[in-house]
Amino acid sequence: MEKELGEPKERKIKVLVADDEESMSVFVGKKLLEEKMVLPTVIVGSAEKALEEIGKGGFTHVITDGFRGDWKKVAQAAQEKGIDITVLSGDEDVKEEVLKEKDIRFISKPMRLEQIREIFEERQCS
Image 1 (cartoon, one colour):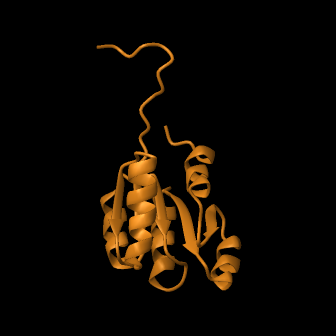
Image 2 (cartoon, helix red, strand yellow):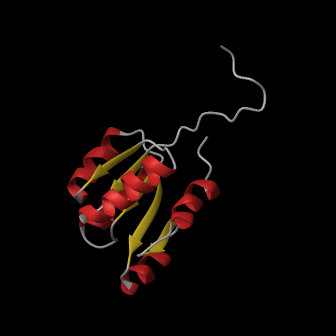
């Protein structure tokens, strides 16, 4: 069956959520991205696993827990592959670090669904 005119194109978005706090991963990855926004999402609980997944390829967005140590390596690996990066943190020092970087978005914890939705509306990946 052919698509009718006016139907939206399929989005080719694939999101990696990397957060060592399980409750945050479940909230962002499962509740917001998979259930509410119906986006394909892979969830990992460590920077090491995030680096492995980024190495496999196919992601358009990475939403990560922080920006220090191994988490900074996750952001750098994503940037090298041209993946959009969003850092979630309640730490003001992390916010200041991220805001100095080019092309990395920062969202303060706790976040709202609208803030997560904006990531995909502002950075179209179709």
